[in-house]
Image (tube, rainbow, N blue to C red):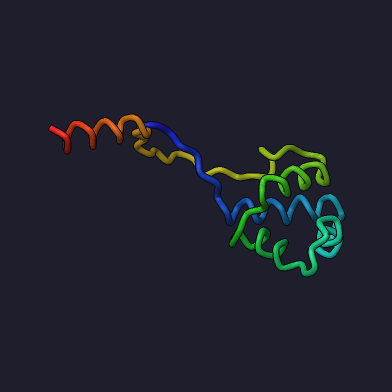
Length: 98
């Protein structure tokens, strides 16, 4: 097994809201920074129902004077079996061609 981190959406959303508040920036300010016509995307980030795109994470990190790693909150202790594409290819090749 291999540890594969995953992003905790709810905790990341709370973190975005906390960082925004600490920076003294309103949702309306972020909306204007990003050029969004509505603030819905920002509310979705803060609620944890969606994540900012990588481009938007880079901008958020600059606005909050932090790193992307400090914005994202990862789930800990999740082991995931990782086979890799070559293993899967070999499995099917040897099991179905012979």
